Amino acid sequence: MHSYQIGILGATGAVGQKFIRLLENHPWFTITKLGASTRSSGKKYKQAAHWIEKTELPSAIADITVSDCRASEFTDIDFVFSGLDSSVAGDIEQEFAAAGIPVISNAKNYRMHDQVPLLIPEVNPDHAELIKKQTFSSNGSGWIVTNPNCVSVPLTMSLKPLADAFGIDSVVVTSMQSVSGAGYPGVPSLDIVANVVPYISGEEPKVQVESNKLLGHINGDTTEYSNFPIQATAVRVPTIEGHLLSVSVKLLDPPSDIEDARRAFTEWDNPIADLDLPSSPELPVRLYEEERYPQPRLHADREGGMQTAVGRLRKGTVMDLGYVTMAHNTIRGAAGGAILNGELLAAKGYFSK
Ligand SMILES: NC(=O)C1=CN([C@@H]2O[C@H](COP(=O)(O)OP(=O)(O)OC[C@H]3O[C@@H](n4cnc5c(N)ncnc54)[C@H](OP(=O)(O)O)[C@@H]3O)[C@@H](O)[C@H]2O)C=CC1
Ligand SMILES: N[C@@H](CC(=O)OP(=O)(O)O)C(=O)O
Image 1 (cartoon, rainbow, N blue to C red):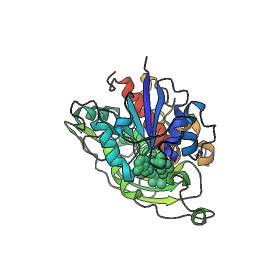
Image 2 (image 1 turned 135 degrees about the vertical axis):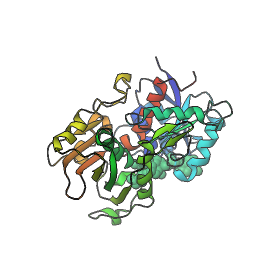
Image 3 (image 1 turned 90 degrees about the vertical axis):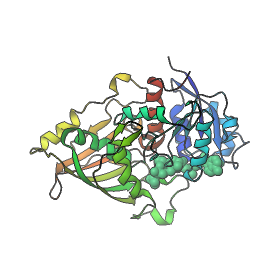
Image 4 (image 1 turned 180 degrees about the vertical axis):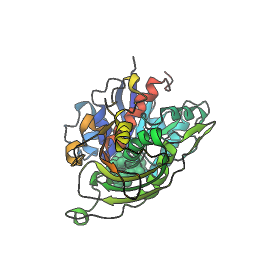
């Protein structure tokens, strides 16, 4: 039986609030500490946070006093989830790991660090082994694990069945990203209402490198990346939740029949199915046959926001295959993905208890 007392860093932000909502009634993880900036510390959570979730702020959380994000304030917990702003996540997460507190982070800072696993449990669960190589803390009790960018998540989860069946030569992707990806208050309304903004600062380079780390292999102390090129275009659209991607793929060993590509998705085996993790979706990658699906408003919440949808699978005219894919950016692409990482690591015995 797993039972852990946990903290949330960046608890007042958009992702922090999603952690709080998703962890209410979690069977393994109980929130006992909340951290944010000095703007919030010392206040009760209900006063510090501008609650933007649709569900009620959990009463067990409302009266917790928010702490500074200092490791010395987070004694007596087993680990933290981090939804910190990336401008501060680097130093704070390192301080926690050095103090022997494991950090499961949603921020970008350590994703490409050699000894830090960039983890999607259904894609590369074995990469968790890198934890044992980390030297953030003197005795190895503190470490950092990250989850990928919210576009890299559906991109990599949808590429994985194709990589396993046919190998990937190259990818072109255009992401149509919802406004919640920019946090709260996020994109100015005069920019995004009835409009599309064809640029998201810093997004395309992350998408281009993270998938190759995720689809790589552990070799000794580090990750050997896969090495297919990805050309990404990141666009902000006026949806609220769910990032939709248009993907074109050239394969190393393309199937002659599109049915074989369909089967690659429908017959793909989830490598963690037998672990029965609480946040694990029944079907991590769902192939829709209806030509108008998937749509963010209709499908982003499927399986608790943890399912990656694939649709419009078709033979390509320039590259081998075309399809669209979509995932809930603040659940599967952020807090929910981090929680699933925590569950995987708990099930595999990584928390010293
Ligand atoms: N929104 C999304 O879809 C996704 C976001 N992410 C990443 O998750 C992280 C959080 O994003 P989001 O929730 O949208 O951002 P927000 O701006 O909504 O929240 C940022 C959080 O960081 C805290 N913070 C800011 N400065 C400090 C500081 N100096 N010391 C301690 N805490 C501080 C804030 O506390 P306070 O309220 O006190 O200022 C707040 O809790 C980012 O790294 C982002 O890139 C990743 C994937 C998807
Ligand atoms: N940039 C993403 C959200 C995000 O914060 O990404 P990252 O975790 O890679 O910094 C978006 O705007 O939708």
